[in-house]
Every structure is written in structure tokens, then in C-alpha cells.
Image (cartoon, rainbow, N blue to C red; front, top):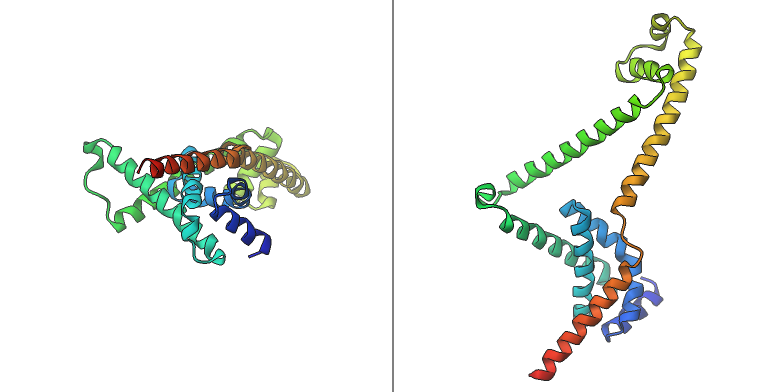
Amino acid sequence: MPKHEKDLLRKSAQGDAASFGEIVRRYQYLVYAAAMQIVKDPAAAQDIAQETFISAFAALKDLRSEEAFPSWLRTITRNTALAWRKQQDRLAPLEDAGDLPSATEESEMETEDERKEADAFQAEVRRIVSSLSEVLRFPVLLCYLDGVPTAEAARFLGIKEGTVRKRLHDGKKKLQEQIVRMAEKTMQEVRLPRDFARRCICGCRRSEAAKKGTDERR
């Protein structure tokens, strides 16, 4: 771990929220991605990431080694995300909740989620293929989706094989461009807001002020 980061952690452990803000900026996307992996909900993952950093700031004084910070933060993220999922299970209607899922059932649920995501992606790819011009779409459908050899496709379409290859090349290029745009749009929808670190700092300061107020009343 870089010395500068260790210094930031030591200052943060002493209550310096501004220093911790730098730590948040360094780790915010890692924490957010770890939360997303568990809860699969952008809004929830954002809340979990913020709660993770607030909890970490409050507990930094108990961290024995700065070198252990990344794994320690990952553990807090995981525990916070799992607690969120458990809370969602409690809030589910009783007729839907049933018994708590076993490890096997949880694995099956994750597999089902992955299948749904794959189906959604395939549906989006089909939509993109459908958006191609007919000149490009037909060769793509024949050769890429149906596995027809280019020579056979050329005979069927009444054009030269070289023309089929050129249209496949152009179609593939357009598909790649649109899929990249689709991925960029998806990432834009789930990215953290620009002021995320500032929100975390504000949350840390509020938490610290509330704790001091409680200590003074004792």
C-alpha cells in the first residue's frame, strides 16, 4: 500500500473526514461493484456503498494494520450487502417468503438471475440485429445465427461470395458499435453520482457528531 494512502488512513482514524474522502474516491467503485455483485440493484448498491464507508470511518480506529484495509473494507461491504438482502427477505410478503432458502436454493436463485440477465442480453442483441438494414441483416442472420456457409448464402441470395463476406464484415462492425453503445448506456445508468464521495463525507460527519452528542449526554 502506498505511504500516502497509509497517511490518509491514519488521519481518517483520528476523525479527519476530508482525508477519508480521498479514501472513498480511491475505493468507491470497488465497493460499489462488490455490492452490485450481491444485490444486483444499482440504487441499493449505492446505498450499501455509502453505508459501508460510514461504518468503516466509524470503525477505522479498530483497524490493526493499514495493509489490511482493502480486505477489511471488502468484508464490511459484503456483510452490509448480505444484511440488505436479508432485510428484503423479511419485508417480502409471508406468502411469498416461505422458509429461508437453503444454500442449494440460493445457488439456484443466482443461476436463475444469471439466466434472466443472459436472456435480456440476447433479446437486446436480437433487437440490434433487427435494426440493421436488410442488405446487412439477411447475411448476418443466415451466416452468424443459422450457421449457413458464405458460399451457400451467396448462392441463395444470388450474389457473389465476396459480396456476402463484405456485408458480413460491415454488419459485424455495426453490431459491435451498437453493442458497445448499449454497454456504455448500461454503465451510465448504474454508475455512481459525481458527488458520491461528498455524500459519504457528510454521512461520516453526521455519524461522528451524533456519537459525540451521545457520549456527552452520558
